[in-house]
Length: 431
Image 1 (tube, rainbow, N blue to C red):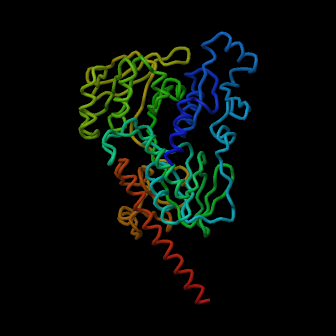
Image 2: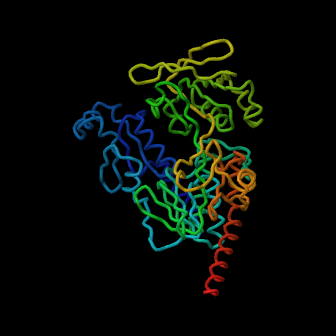
Image 3: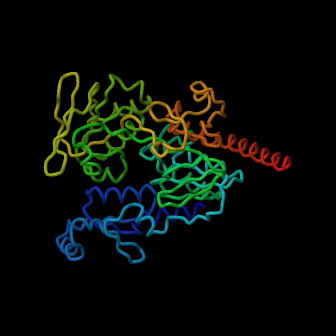
């Protein structure tokens, strides 16, 4: 196992794998680069427009800008402006399922909670399938240095933690499919059926919803036009390289925001932080507050929020902020958001899984208090369907808590499967 990990690290550092050709700061190039990086897949990015000969070559082999970026795959094939799913398919990531197989557990989401559930369930002999729409790590993957996670005194990145858990789950036999978006959950049939975005269907006895939450996108006029081209919801080495030596604005006051501030401050000229509240103590860990306070190139703007953005020729030129002293203009081309959380539960609309007013899934005692339904601690309103991690109403939004719920849910799964099988045997005897 160690040899496999070290070989993969060497491949990543050596820049082998597919080659992405296009403008390095173009949104589609950034998206593909992040997609491969989040999945720890070796790749190289070439900005052909930095070189006149490279730009001339691109003009010869492409009809228009719509063909960019080009992705040159290891087998020699060339993809023109591929989607993430198309690139994954060409690289052979998408698994083929036996339509007759029924998994004991289907885990939806490969963040810390989902991967923990996969590791513990697979290690105990259950058949497990894990699905994620983009990459292992979930929202925790945006954390560039988690320093209070048990067992890592020097800290670990969210992506590295997820990558280790990903390999560990595979080691125990879990089948992991990335990218694979779940379109619907059919709980009316037995076994339960999941419909994937390519019309494939997967059968399972139990489902674990671990789809987590995404950073909320503020309602600011024109903001959507700059996704991946000046506005970011992630602070990985990809964004750090784009912003290197420049001034950036970051919005947010939670732990993920704090980790991003510390990381970016080591690579950019200055970080302006806009925080809605009057202090950080209620939302950020003390060690991060102290670390930020010691950084000379970080300015905190408390009780301040984004009032608007200025742009020119398709690029952000400044951010207008509004605080206690009125409006202020911050010159920048890069705006990071780490604000709030929106649960990834839109795909559950027709599944009869009950959620709270914000869309987080109701489970256990919270579900019982609201509806009178009696369920095991992590079970939803639908028997055999469980929810863990950030997507669960009332959960503690911490990586360690999410991983703990992933381990704990396996006991409830065993109990449900045993009860279901006993009921089936009793029914067979009665017949």
